[in-house]
Image 1 (tube, rainbow, N blue to C red):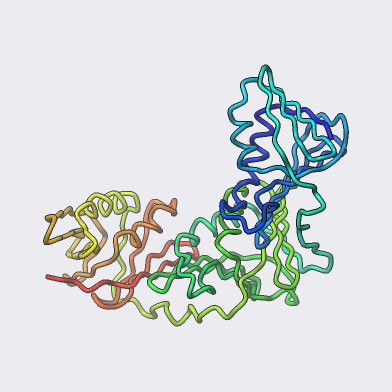
Image 2: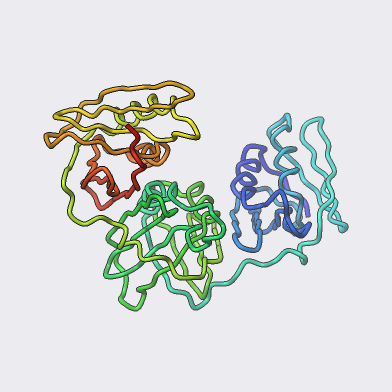
Length: 365
């Protein structure tokens, strides 16, 4: 196999697929990228057996063929090359010679026959979803995915296709983010799935704001085709908890707040939280919220923020990281904070169909 390609194009294509590869791969082949040179293109594929990514890039192919090379090492070599044209030659023993300007490297690969193939999606259920819609739904929910591996069904985003709507939900038991979008699909396509966090991370990296993503579902596998690049992943099997039970019913108070101002105020005040008192207290009074942090061993901080509120005075406390997470990932100018009392969950909402439920913390006077 022999090909030449610009350094920038090769590096970008490798970086797009390298994230899947674990630094603690169980098999040597799983540390490698499968490189297939055929028909004027290089096709690059990586997998960790749960998630796989493949993409292609134009190249000048002198001799067609395929091999697998250690992807992290290859990326670090290509990133440091001096000139713009890279020439790669691979011999029958899968030894790759890389030439670029005065630089020469030789790295040892493994035969492509050892590389586990990505699953095929022949009789699959198909959805076509705008990339911008998918990206927006992931951005608004993925920060609430649980990292607790003992509750594995929460280690991903629950996606429901039902009654002409696509609903994304993520929760770690202490907060919950949900977004709903209209989507046309036949009633036979109604289903609920859980997409693991690793696949969500790859998807977020690859999605753009133009064009559609083709989503295929077959058995316990999902595939996303995004402009010729493909992500495949196993789905998380198990029953997702009934998230609707967590969403509070009637609100008692609705406070309208400037999102960015609120975010910056909470961020500043949270500088004086500590592990033992990791909460910010919001005290509501007419037209105003006092944001406070108080830590016995560090000190205290307090900052007022203007808010559209005219109810009775009361206070509620939240984990500052959980409070800031949606504010960082939304783009609307204003958010609504719906509250019942100081002990019930708060809900951040927008005019669109997004909501974020956050459990309160005990307020200490």
